[in-house]
Image 1 (cartoon, rainbow, N blue to C red):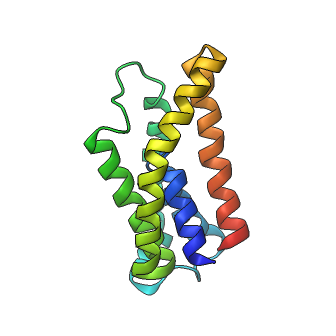
Image 2: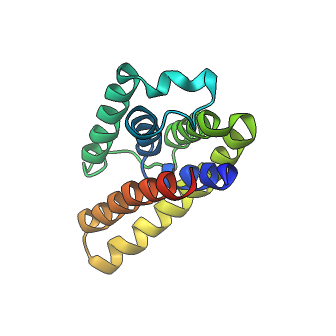
Length: 148
């Protein structure tokens, strides 16, 4: 189940870079620190959670700005791969990190495609972005509650 959770968290990281990692940290801090492997126990500390949730919040805002670069540019893809690898590794070590990376690689491009389709359908990028926000937050919470 952990590999599936890491894969799905990686996919969701394709939508919002920091959301899955921030919510894994919050989950470990508030609900259940046990799922984290020992070398990632630092994620269950306030000093880790606060900057991660701040980054996730800033990303929610920044994503709506017209000058925000595409997630499919090299920097956006690398950030997503790294965030998903850390989230996966925290839950299940190297195999889960790899699953997270695979999910993030597909998620970065898949979520960009879905956002483009939704933007055209809604005739509004803001509405598409808000749907994507809900997908990233709700999906991550569902994965953590149901699979971890």
